Length: 525
Image (cartoon, rainbow, N blue to C red; front, side, top):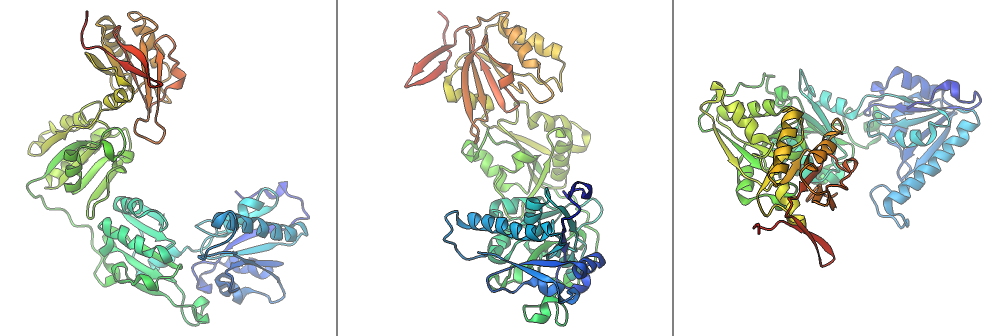
């Protein structure tokens, strides 16, 4: 954030990060032009060849007698012999550049650092700002972004009404970029150049290639701005028609408002068509297992590959591999009924829909939510199928042996959908029946006391040395498994990503190959 002027010495200069807009000097703000003309020092980045696009845009507003600081990048796309690699070289450059600007600021000179587009929108200025704003007054002057200029160039709005615009860097891995594009109403992808082939593939995988546009050097033209120096002019084409070998860094891939996606090619703007009902739709509720693709059953994988729509909680949808033309509908964790209705409505209109759940969809998950909503007469003609998945309890049990090897119970400690009195009564019954129990949803940020209460209920019937397995993020990057006892269980070490297995009176813990194995015999003596 900009530093308050009142906290800075009066003798120091001000650092201005001035947004120049997309390239046409006439699109620079009045404030930007004034500051450039008044500044003591004009600073700008450039590559090794010494030329600066930023300076060429600002040239009409320079006085001619100002001191110029040329901040020359040590590397751009080439390799480097720096011991820290590219990151090491560029960080060292930023530190050196900040010291050079600080010398002017300490001497009381105002510095304007030129920045194409907007200083805080993928702008080079931000790296100087974060190094200097604590010591000097530092102010960013916004500019027209390349995304706005590209939208104007194709003559189509970025988004309208309730549509959501997503801005993405082209440096993302192709699968992630494709997933985000598939979820997007409208999108802009920055940082093209060498990434263009990957970006084009991502649009194709997302089924959005035919609706996307390519804008190069937006607003650059002969007679004004960088275009007049022979560095290129504005170019607009359908994204699908662009030769990757011709793409420079100063370009944007744009997916405009769905209602106006075809306008740049000459079609009249039209409202999105109302889908006609067609027969044959179906909702398949799919269990993804507890973590990565290795937990997914072949049956579930086939259903996901065949689905036209994937509906679910955002992190679970993100685990589904992107397929060309498949539409994805992500939502929050507490709108299960809304998700179910959305899926049923899509299927009623003839679509094949996969609703995804972690683990098994029939265990505290989406199968029950979908079937509950399917009882509404509106969806009486919609087929619903449920495909099983590996449960979190099964996955956790497998990591330590077979603690669920005999009769057991599965119980959720969440009291969001049922009162705690019912949970306590069931825990008491489980303890009296000497059943092993898998405890789902043991704790969350808003539920801190239930696990301690559950432990106390079970201790009415179990010995304090009863084995307890605390399994966290099974199959994930932060997987951990701890074997403790009911008496020593610390609820403060448990969060929503954990699942607990509390053994019965028969459950044993043995040392095997340096690890602790937990298992419950299948017979009573």
